[in-house]
Amino acid sequence: MVQDFVKRLFLDNDSRIRTDSIITSALLLVVTGFIYNFFFFVPISVNGKWIRAPRGSSVQDIIIKEAVILQSGDLRDTNGRLLKKEGGRAPGLFINGREVARSGIVSNGDRLTIRPGLDIIETVERKVEVLAPTTYVQGQGAFLSIDSTGQAGMKIVNIGATTGRVISEEIVRPAKPVILKRTKFTNDQVVALTFDDGPSPTFTPQILSILQGQQIPATFFVIGSQARKNPDILKQIMGAGCTVGNHSYSHAALADAPPAKICWELEKTEEVIRDATGVGSNWFRPPGGSTSLTVLEAASLEGCKTVLWSVDPLDWMSPSPQTIYDRVLSQVQPGSVILFHDGGGDRTATVQALPRIIEELKLRGYSIVNLDDLVGKE
Image 1 (tube, rainbow, N blue to C red):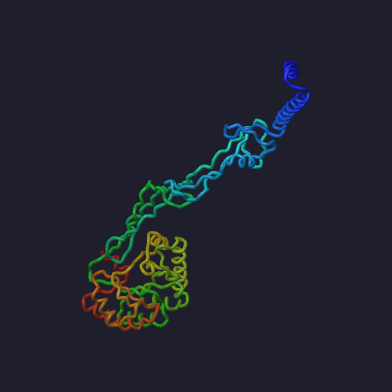
Image 2: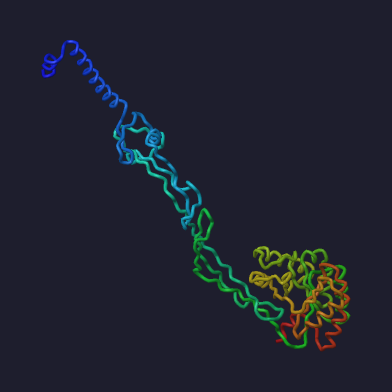
């Protein structure tokens, strides 16, 4: 009524028509805008902030509209150093507390939570390590025995799963060392001669002839693979009053070998010796003197005592006969075990030096005995 009164009072007919049109248009715009917003936009909350989003918008549409930067966190080590950019936890997208993909559609009144990526610390792996006991050889003399079997230790190690970096370690049980004892059994004027790496069809018979001529014994530590080819020479050794010893089957270094390998080397050689002579060996010499607790235990299981040497003229390097002679006589002492070689190469110099060595030993008052007699003289 007020509107009509104003129109009648101040406006002419044309003006009233124009005013009606303007008011009508404005009302139409308001109504149209309301209808448009109501039907084509929906209110949603983005991390607590309410916005209007086109109806049917995806989460990705909202991310673009709000210029949200999505970036994974980083992977870092336990000291905080960067290991991998964006290698951490990925951003999380949740509608009303439920995790959704970027293609998820938002609805009227939804609460969209965008959780940023987070840095993560590399996983720490806990490992238990066995500490192998150190082996010590104590004493002097050629004969080896076990003084202490030792005990393995234990260590806890924390390692970064990504970097492999040792973060911390703790020894929870120290290792106790293995003690191998070298013994000299006598100070009497006696020595033992030993020969390694045969049998040789060329040099072993020559050495046996010299020993028989002097009526003295010796021990021949044979390689199983060589002995298998020359079983008759093993019989000759025994027939000459000498002893056959075990020197492994393949002349392998045994100190770090697996137990199964060590046992095979000894057992195979014992088999060859028994097949050729009818009896096994009482003595074992590890190739190169490479020994360990396991080696001694394996030899003991085979019924063999382990012996090294106390005099080494290095005749395997083929020095002159005079050099071999000089080296032996400069090193020999009462109770010595002298190392020679009858196989593994040209042993002509050893054969030539041997008679003079034996004669000089006798002149110095030494008796030459076998290993069993040397051990027995306490």
